[in-house]
Length: 530
Image (cartoon, rainbow, N blue to C red; front, top):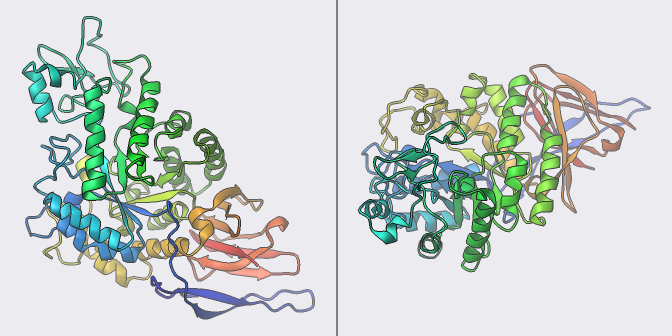
């Protein structure tokens, strides 16, 4: 069976005729019937796309990606099925990455202007795409005017930062063994490095500044919310013996302030830790947090070609988070991001495994975040610059939108990695992502349904149910390079209507009391209830 290209206004579904003959079964006959089915947009759920502006698309041929270039590519994202965009830092900064800000209410000159940013947000909203931006408030750049004034002895701005006193252990190391205290004569805290001095959130003036900054982006620019960098490092154990509790209190205060401006504000936190540490941040504070544990399990499972506990772990975590947040949290799921080796590098170039990672991500609950270029199989490993290489648009290297701020090391094969080439290849990574996204966006249970353990089990498979009050589907993934033949558990025989398949060699045989399935290697099927 060959899946036809899917468009926003129509989804081609498959209607099956099953013939029963005197106690024997017959393989399903398949015919196509076009059914117009609009993509669903169920807020606050959505598929997000993380963009490093410098690497994405160039509008003025200077080799550096910019906001106008990103605006010109919004139709590409809309066609892919993206419902939200996370922009990595766009404010002025002395670094290429932007995580050391020098002005919180302006745009990096390489990227354009505030007017360009307003236009980007307006055009995204026109396409029903939310925009969230990185808000980096644990620290500033050491070149920020606040810190420069603090170094001169200005009492107001000195209070904006964290300084050592006579009781400070200046030899103390941070949680990953890094130096914490910096400076020649007077020591200041900078848990990431000396170019990023930490802000003092015990200062009412700092808290007021941060709220006003966030208000500016919500009211003046129109963003829908923020990805909150280093959310668990607002206070550090180096300067407070109640760091975690004070972090939770700050985020509750921050959320209460911003919800007065936009009750639907998105606050996605980077809390890179286990579920017991993440959970309290969801108690009236962050609306969501990135699920690093799940990302690790997805990658480990596709690499090992066996389930390492994806469903069982996720069910427990979601129950825990729902209890802590009174049911008001949404998981933010992903495979890799700008701080991690890319998927294709992690799986050593195995495209089948990379596709399976995408299939898992896009069928599990939560709001999936796709790092730019994952949908075209970009590669990259540490150092960070090599994880953030230019996106590839065309088979030709000199097209106007192609960024070139950094020489390519991992992705020189333009004819293979370019969107232009992948759109034409039905078996490409791009088309796999696009088909999976479109399947997700036409089934309510895949968008907002809860996950449930399935009764059907077999080594090499990941099987689970997704259910809302009205809809339920059974999702089956074959993680292995072998055909997998099995029967559905008797309690799941009602799931025998094929909603989606990633491989046209899938076989489903229905008997009077059995449903037998053969899944080809690295394939996915989604079954509806009859």
